[in-house]
Length: 454
Image (tube, rainbow, N blue to C red; front, top):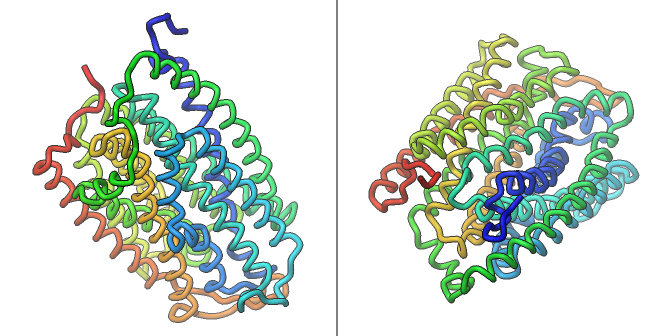
């Protein structure tokens, strides 16, 4: 409850309740984003797709964000019209894009072509691309919502909890996708995601009522000056800030070592480490499970103790160890492969819990939407380019044999070269993290200091 002199976000119960509401929307988005990753083999076996075509499909998530700069426009819109309308638009895009993807995979064949691509591949990729715009814009919207509702409070912990709950969606996707697809049909796991996304849209509508009331309280308590009004000159201010480039580069390199890797990791676990098909997706989802448990813990530590820049360095170093070990051809231990997934989960918890609250320290509130949007835009270059690259590399250089699945002849692959590519990206992430710590000392971002005000 709040007293007459309190704002809604001064009540711990209300601000954490708001967090749970918007986190559910992101949980649904993460489920849909990851639900087709464990189904690479079925997509190849039932639809006749190649690894190259699968790479095109999974890279489509970021296509519009990269080539039409949709995330940049989304960030500008967010800072211009606010989180409520932007979030509603973003969730509608996710629902519509997922519906198109499901329809294409369920009802369209691959004999006809559109722009030189199989019909089902083209429409599914287009739907996934529109979903990607909605998911990324929703992501920056929710991040800015948390920065606003938890300003001066448990911001890193709140962002950690939101990330953790989103990973619940990922873990659910990796855990249930393959068994459900085998028992109920290829597109059934995606249909579940579509239903949950509709629930996420309704959940976000509930949030808007709370946020509108907070707006009214802020306007009655303060006089909004020019310093609180967004202008397009802020875009130039953001990109001129050295901290932006270090955070953005770390973001794209770090996430390019995680999300694209997970798109192929189920097949890696099955073919190289002899993990059961029914369990491989669950083990690939272990990083999401680790994030569920550890990200709030690390976020709470950063709120109280600081050391965000150092934690980002540690997380990047752990990624190098994971991918370098996966790249060793002579290692086939399933136990080690699973252990490496756990280590990846720890790194996956460390870096986001430190990185996203750091953006709120580097930029003022009026530039946060633009800053997050530009960072997410650069991140999407990696989320588009890396899985597309890995698919092409597998098809061109890594075929070791063939087998027949559901009447379709599919290729078998050696993942040594792709894992070396991921290792190189992780090394680059470590270098950028070290440079960020140097910049923190030089420009006084206070990344090593606690987030909570005494």
